[in-house]
Length: 147
Image 1 (cartoon, rainbow, N blue to C red):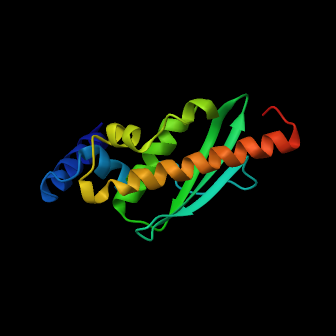
Image 2: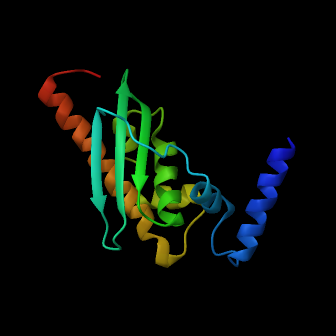
Image 3: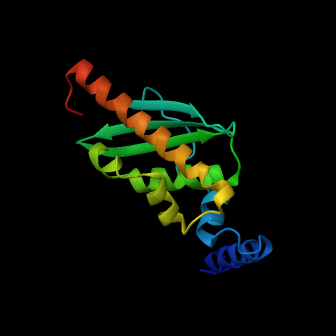
């Protein structure tokens, strides 16, 4: 319980230090990202570099018609981590079809917004996720599996 109080206070201070520019949720996802890493032999995979130069990779594992595991890597900044981490959290446990609803605006809503100069990070996350979903769908059709 004490650890949660400390974490909340750190997030509050970071929020204050950034002039309220980033929500506490953005700071939390950006500094303690969820699902960071890779999956060997994924069911779906995509790698995309945005105009800003940040590269994102997303790895999917689908079982019984749902995203069982999802991981990502990025060489981007805190807001890139926050956006991709949020996208992976939003996708986990959902069907690939439902994950198509995870758009730039859905990620921004989930995070409580981003400054205009950082909103491209949510677009980068959604594009890479959708490409990984497409890779899964194409591979599934090719193999004839019903994962």
